[in-house]
Length: 280
Image 1 (cartoon, rainbow, N blue to C red):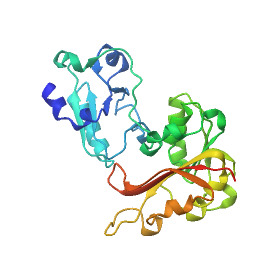
Image 2 (cartoon, helix red, strand yellow):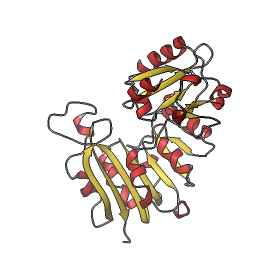
Image 3 (cartoon, rainbow, N blue to C red):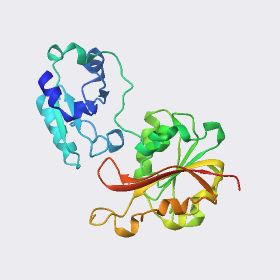
């Protein structure tokens, strides 16, 4: 097991999904593992909301070889690379890798841009958070766990349903709403203490964000950008041009705290900004 762990990408990334019964997990598991008791014969597919991003490796820990192999193949078929599996043998686990008892670890994560600049957010008491194109709500749930009141809008009911599942699993409340963000009437005007806008670009809405913030409120935006020669998703019209975020959050309305034109962890070109509304 020691040799396997050293070669396991999922172990190195601390993405360990232990699907054994919880009573077995409590008696002994890999340090940092997340417990998700699972039987393919009885349970529906594991919701993607509980898993790490698809570009991150994953290690499945199972009781039996076939169980681990089947789930690794099923998850790999969802476009996850790589997915490995390990058959648990506690007597073979080195002591430095072994933990007992329950674990609060989870595999899902908030957007890295949000986590990186969390310290610049106003405190929860300053007012609510609006997440534009919130998807399955990882950012909202993460902030709700930190005391923020959160509202998320997305046009996909299926994604919002996953967000509700995640919020329930973390015992927090988030207000998920179906809405078409291309329609100004479906965008709550605020004012908001925090506005998030990740991986969604509607330019008419982007330039309205500063005015939707209360004075001292903070906007975080990050989405795809145009790079010569890049042919991947999304289409060119949905990619930011160089300097476009700086223009949208200009000095007449905002103080720019951070700005970057680089790449996201999955390798796609992206640009991000953190901007604070100034008094006007």
